[in-house]
Length: 79
Image (cartoon, rainbow, N blue to C red; front, side):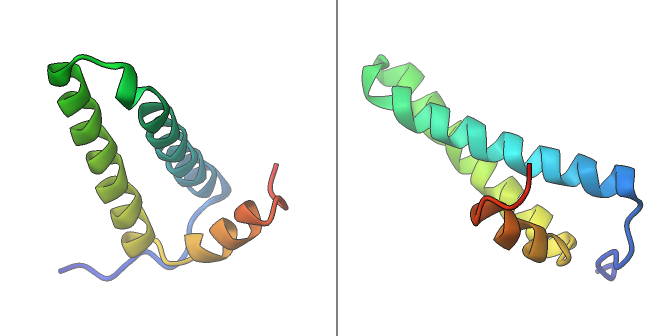
């Protein structure tokens, strides 16, 4: 297994932060519409939501420096 990246350029960091925020948005959206969907679509929404969660976890695992950004973001300090 490769070592996690320790130093990111500003563009790389911004891309990862944007990707994480997108996964968060997709997860929230899917949770909000899940109960309004037909059974097959509901299953698809649940699977996509779970996949977004796995992707979030992998980002945090691969880029540990995102933990500091996430802590600031959840406090409302990142715009």
